[in-house]
Image (cartoon, rainbow, N blue to C red; front, side):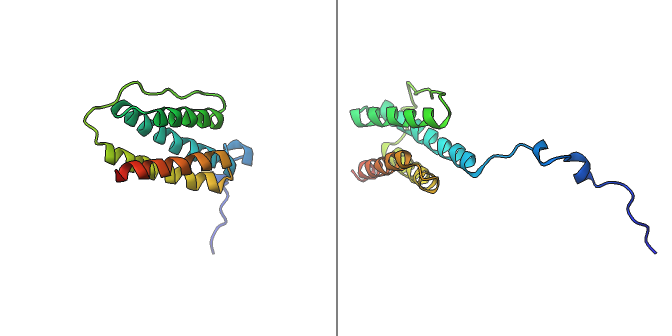
Length: 132
């Protein structure tokens, strides 16, 4: 009653072998995600450093940059030299706290102890700064 389909499927002709498509492992995806969260946290930390310089924020920025360099395979992130002066410190600390929390979740899921410890320390520091 019905004629069988005589042409090959688009899916089989486009994908000849599974290696035709780039695939990342779960660990690679988590590395990318963690690097993104830490980069965002570094950007907020740089804004805070420009508005209210402190040795703690300088040390945190250097540690974040070190973790980013490790996760990106040796590519060193640029540290910002200036930021907009109209930003509110409490909201920046709150945003940094949220970003550090996200980084902590990803670091914990990929069992990256160094990044997890750094993220937890930044969460504590920004929570304390946001409350004052």
